[in-house]
Amino acid sequence: MPVNWRNHIVSTPEILRGKPRIKGTRIPVSLILGYFAAGRTTDEIIVEFPDLKTTQIHACLDYARDSAEFEEVA
Image (tube, rainbow, N blue to C red):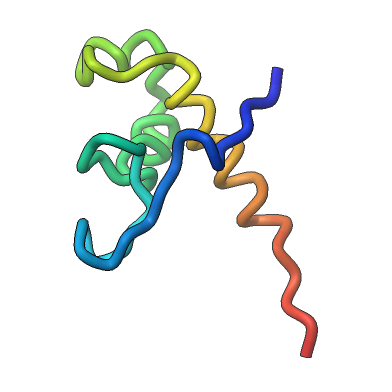
């Protein structure tokens, strides 16, 4: 089931130089996506970051999907 990533992902210039991160943490979305790219499962990611919730991790995937679908109109 898709997650509304906007409820879980934020970007503020003063934290991680504006890189998208999981709200309430300093964990960048790119780090979680890297774990998935390396073949890790959601459960394995939670072992590494026990404070994260499954919905936050899934929000990273939905964020990536929406970012990949972004089209710039010239």
